[in-house]
Length: 124
Image (cartoon, rainbow, N blue to C red; front, side):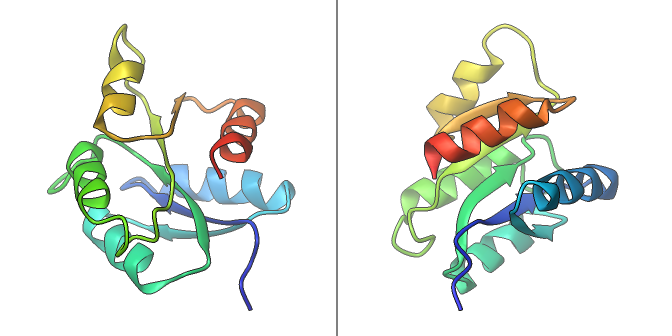
C-alpha cells in the first residue's frame, strides 16, 4: 500500500525527529526517519512511498548539501522526490544557498509547523 502523505525526516538529532514526527502525525502524515544522510539516501532509493524529504543541512559525515547534490545527480534512483531544507541556518543568504543546492523548500528551526505543512503541500 502506498501512503499518500509519507515523509522522510533526515536529521542527526533524535529530539528533532521526535518533535517533527509528532507534529506530522497530528496533521495526518506518516513519517519515517534516518539519523544520517547516508541512511536517508538508502531509504529514499529503496522506498517508493516517500513523497517528500525533510533534510537537516548540518550533519556529520555527509551534510545536507552533499546529499542534495547526490539526489539531483540521480533523480531516477531517488524517485525525483522533493526535498525541504529544515535547518538552524537562518542567516541572510542561507535560504538561497539551500534552494541553489537543489532543495524545493526551506524552513528554519525552530520549526513553525504551519509553515512547514504549507511548504510540504506546495512541493509534494
